Each structure stands twice: as C-alpha cells, then as structure tokens.
Length: 514
Image (cartoon, rainbow, N blue to C red; front, side, top):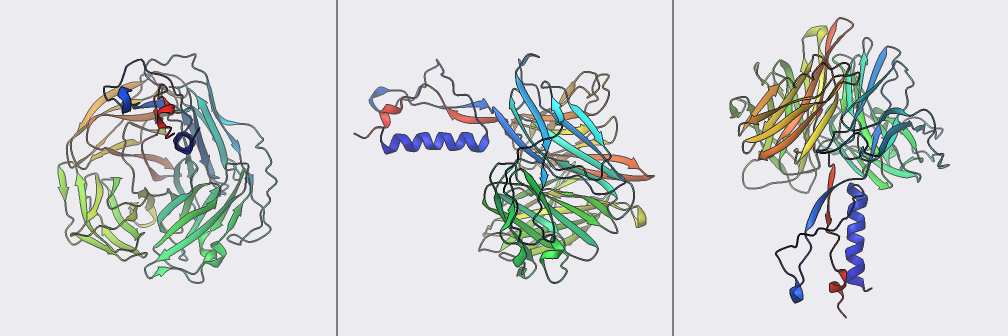
C-alpha cells in the first residue's frame, strides 16, 4: 500500500476520532458520478456516532446548593427499546499539586482509573434520567456513552443556591472535551470570583495555557502557563490569582498544549448572583447570540478580536417582528487581540430577542462574543450569560425542563426555517409531545415547549431543523428559590449525533500511483 492510500486511511481515522466512531457500511445504490476507468466514485454518508464523551464541572461549594443532574439521548426514528448501549458519568479526581489556585503545578500523573458510583446512567434512548444532590463537595464528572445512547447524548446540571455571594440558578450543559475554549466576559474585578474548571477525561496528562486579554491587550499572567491536569482529574483556577490588578471586562482563552480537557467558567458576582459562562462559538466573522429575555433590565456585550485585524461589528437585534439596529448602539469596534465591551441597557423593551453581529464595512476579522444578561432590580437582581452559539444543522437538545418555567427561543437570522420541537417523556413517567414551528426570516420566536403527555419529573426538549435556513436556539429556565426568582440560559448547538464517512464499497486500490 503506497503513501496516497495511507493518507486517505489516516484522514478517515482522524475524522472518526474527532466526531465519534461511526459504522461504515456498504450501499447497494451506485453513485451516478464515475471515477477514472468508469469506476463509480464513493459518496459520503451520514452515520450515527457510536461513542460520545462529556465532562461536567463540580457544581458548587456552597452548603446551600441543591443540584439536579439530567441525562438524555433522543430516540432515533425506528429505534426500539432493545437497542444496545451504555451511558454514565463517574467522579473525577481532584488535582492536587500542592500549590495555590493558578500556580503552575507538577500534578500527579498516576492515571488512576475512575471509580465511584455512576451518576445518571441511561438505560434507553427517549427517556431522561435525573438525580439530585445537596453535597457541597459534589465532584466533577467524566463520562462516555456508546451504542444507541451515543448520538445526541446530553447531560444538564442545574444548581440552586439560595443565599450568599454565590446565590443564583447555575445551569450548565456538560461539554465535549476539546483543545480550544474562548470565554469573553470573564472578570478579575473585586466583586467577581470567576473560576475556570479544567477537567481531563483521558488517561494521559493534559497541559493547558490560560491567556487573559483586556481592553489594552494581553494581561500578564505567567502562572497561567503550562498548567498540568493529571489523568481523570479536575482543577478549578481562580482567575483573579493569575493577574496583578483587577480588570472588569476580560476574555479568557484556554489553549491546550497536549491532551484535551473540558472547560467551563463559574462566574460569581457579589451583587447580582452567579451562573456558568459556557465557551463561545469558535472565532468567526459573524456571531448570533440567541435568547435575550423580554424583561432583561441590563445587557452587556463583550467581544474579542482573535486575529491580526480589527473587527468593526454592526449590532442588530432580532425580535418577533424583524431586525432593527438599537438606537445609540449601532456598532462595536474591537481592536486586534483586545477586548471591547458595551452596555446595551434594556434593549429588548418588553420583547424577546437575539443579537446578531456582522462585519461593518468592507473588512471582516474573526472574533468571539458573549452577553451578560441581568433581570430584576435592586437586591432582586439575577444574572445569566449567553455566548455566541453555533446553528442547529440537524438536531439540538437541552435536558432538565420543569413543569413550568421553561422558555425556548428560536432565531432564523437569514431565511425562514421550520423546526420540530419535541418534549420527551418525563423522568418519572408520561409520554412525549411535539409540534412543528416556523420561524420567519430575520426574527426571533419565544415559546413554551409542548407539555409532555402526563409527564412527571423533568423532561428534555429537542429541536430538529426540517427545512429552511440556519436556526439558533436557547432555553431559559426560571425557578423560584428562597423567595427570589432565579434564571439560567443554555444554548442548543447541534448535537453532532452523526458523522460523514465514505461509503464502505470504495475501492482504495484506484488510489495507487504505481
């Protein structure tokens, strides 16, 4: 076998490793396009992934926290109850390097296997599983789903903290491990305690650099370099310990030198509550931030230009009846490798909306962006974060919806789109319900998910794009705890439950150049 053939096989192997191992089966239908010598060229087919990995951060250190974990895998068309598969999460080890938060640690690379009782193990697709804990030392979790439970496996953790500086409803969708995470909107100011949670799911050590960027460029943070995360372990790093002076609007870049990690930021504000700040969509020349509540009293936009060019951004608000440019907030200029922020006030004016950022003028430069959203006034304020999201190409899911308090937001910034919204059976019984919804071009639609038939317990909501243009989605969850209305917002990116693979009847011998 020559080098050309080996290169193709390596590419196929790398694709499967990145997006999940997929079955490769032959197809009796011939492709109408012919290759050299009249032989038909193989076409790519989309197949369900066979393995998915997720990482959940440690939920809270508060003695007043109550956490709910909910796991769910959508049921594929034609799928039955006997489909094989397994999905569970196990506790990660705390990383102990003998130093303060943010110190460059030597780490413990023992590579101990994960042990302990599994959390929210799934038995079958289509039915969510929920578990509660009030432990202040609840660990970070590392898990894998395979077989029929892998495509679209979703785990949500929701924590209600009723008092103290960390009060609030903290919602986090557990994340797939990766090597590059951007968090615009973190802070090292005195009224904030922002921790980035770094979790290594693998049996080899991971090495991470934490880079911080303010309004004048990169902040000096030497202790954020070469942070070692031992195998199967987790490490929280307090961002304010990395820098010499407090800075309000900061962008954090977690760049992995070796291995892979899951990364999430827990932002705790002494005045307006706390929530998780998820990583923003990868850098691009356009961003959509879906799901600003209609009663938002304050919205702050934070953006960072990741490349060598400045990003001049046009700001548009997509609402129920169309898009408009907020008066007095028409654009945001972001200098290369610097962070810019703008306070947009109560720009939704009683209607739900989404923010769309596009290049202003002829130039376009890559950037990342996120929103901090505040509701309420005075000592009744509460906050959440909306990072730039990726569109739902096929399907997206959010778990842990309650009998009331869930609002789904759908945005179609370019052209009209039709989606199917399905609410699963409840974790304690009931049956699914679904409806089709059309989102008009350039608008944002907020709706209550269909109520599951006789559902008991929490349930999952899945959005499937049927036709039309790109759709961006988020879910707002409201819970009253301790006499205070609290909320959290999670995006619904595409679940990447399928992977494109070459058809199995491809004749690789045609690639020989002998």
